[in-house]
Image (tube, rainbow, N blue to C red; front, side, top):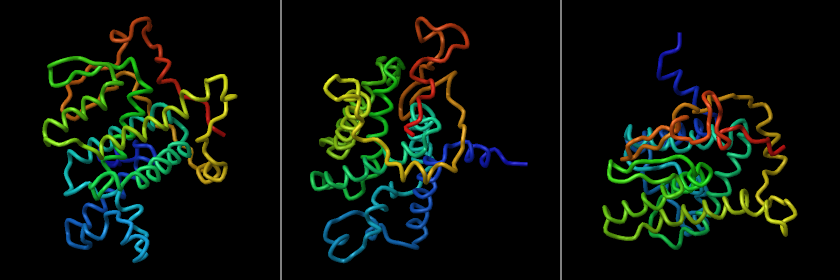
Length: 257
């Protein structure tokens, strides 16, 4: 019989589960002294001249000392996105992470932050927030706002706490906006001809064809934590919905294949 932790682990969709597992193993490896964190961050000199190509990946896997708070939030942000607009589209979600990672690596000279995992997390938060405009969030009981404002609230909160502009967070927002524009806005424009410039390549789709997962959609309550009080996304909070009706932004989209 599976224990609750095991059940929870296998309920997480495949791409998020793989990413979080790799992140946890990386953090534990640093924690026990198996590797040094200075061997993981991305820098052009070390990566290209010293041929330490693993830094392309490990810079997105290390989030600092391991903590349950880190684990909970990185799982929640990624899981909500993969179980929502990317439901049953593991290849598309992997392609999103790949494109976002490449863009952040290109932009990395703009920031002095050695690790880009939090920038990638901000990208996911931005995309989720733009695709769920009707969800309402409560910031520590002070004020209520709709989901599209979430990245900016987090950005402002980070600025107040750290007393300097969080450039790495802004990079994540910029990359998320570029993806959102070309995937959700541009194809609906008349001059685009319906073309999706960021469409997942067929070879990536074929690699994921054997993965048939049906993660549960969070229909009753969808909310974001990280210092926020939760306002569930229920029938009462969605005007015009009837009992048992699935909101349009939570309905599974068509596959990219």
